[in-house]
Image (cartoon, rainbow over all chains, first blue to last red):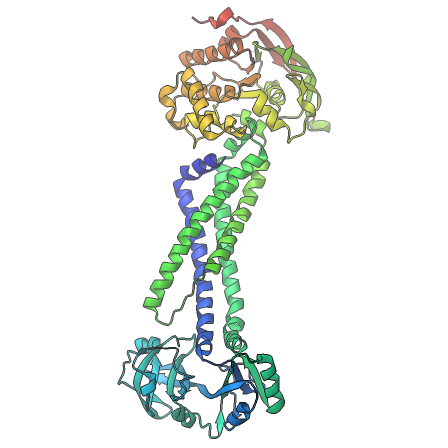
Length: 370
Length: 237
């Protein structure tokens, strides 16, 4: 029955184009929306993930480094080192700062780099060297540099202080802010931290029991919360998942509905147009099961072609969008393509359901009526 | 033995005041190699009779035996197989599948019966060549003349070697010459290949190829007479 389905499908080229186009558009929409979500989700966790720490120590009651400020005494270093299993302790200073850039509001997340340890160095340097960073200098993200047309040597005013751009980094473009880096001392002054730090970063000795070290710290040092690297990265990403996931889910559902409606309507109208032919096929002895296969194959071919075109378009649109709008981030993962493909298959089966009911109800005796 | 045997067949539509008896207690036998022509005015119940005997419509009462099997007692799921294996249909408006070429149209019943596509197309080609359509194998129905379409329709009806062919007004949409060609084919189908052919028509010319002519009126066979069938299908030559 495959070839009857194929012939039926390609006989009506305009209808086929509408059907494939509709599915492709739905697939494009779903993949891009999901890609943006995954892209920002990935970006959100990328910097904390790149920091070489096994454990993050924060003030009790703090969820992540973006939503709330964590303040810890900056003299806990030796206390940490006295606990069994801890090899190295670094201090992390970081805070969101609002600035005016070319007359527009811009949010920065400024991190203080301890040049000695380099634990909080930028995710990736594109221009300049973080090890040469001096007080009064700043490393900015390349997306911000491109958008604001800034380059090394230009000035940037932050909280009545003027900084000279000494480097351009990448990987720090998050939805609402861009990572920037100053020296550790500069950050401490800017944030008025005095004898406080925001987080401690702990590197464990190899073979140490992470859970044991966690409980030892909690027993020894009151008022702190310990997170493993993965827990901290997940907490950082939570800002995206909590805020955007419901919106993404609604948009993806709309995409699926659009695709299902398109495939359903085109298959249904094709079925209505060919209902006499289906009646003839029934009369000459084709079973409902064989006709079911014919319609499902037509629907499947349409959605598979729509999926392929939609997926290719999604890559092209994602690529072009990142060039045109530098803050646009998409991450199209194979697993996402797989579930979208699965969704399109379900789409085709749902879209074929009503036409199938119509075919089942066709009375083959009707073909004798002229 | 009769290939088609109808016993006390009745079909009633509706109920109460709207009840209509389309076919009323009809009995009939058709043997292999026999051409039976059913004639009658419009609304006499001819189409209802042919759709019931063609296993497309369940009778209200009575039995239909096709090759000895009582098809009126079969379920809806079993009937398509009977139609596929035992019956062939020729329609007034040809009813070819518009997206398939002549050869593919003829191959459909074979493919539905589980024959591989390549093999089915080869057999369809052979049958179409016998019917003089060698040059038209790859033509879509829209590119065929009325006579050619009806020949493709006949080829599709006989491709599975059915025992009975049902033809509904097979010459109605054809000119005189083409109508004769189709009559000739139907005649050959019955005579040479020992099939039963049941034709429903208003076309008086078809009397010439029929063994039996049944006059149908108000759901009943009101008259039966011998047709002008000529031996060895030479009636018009």
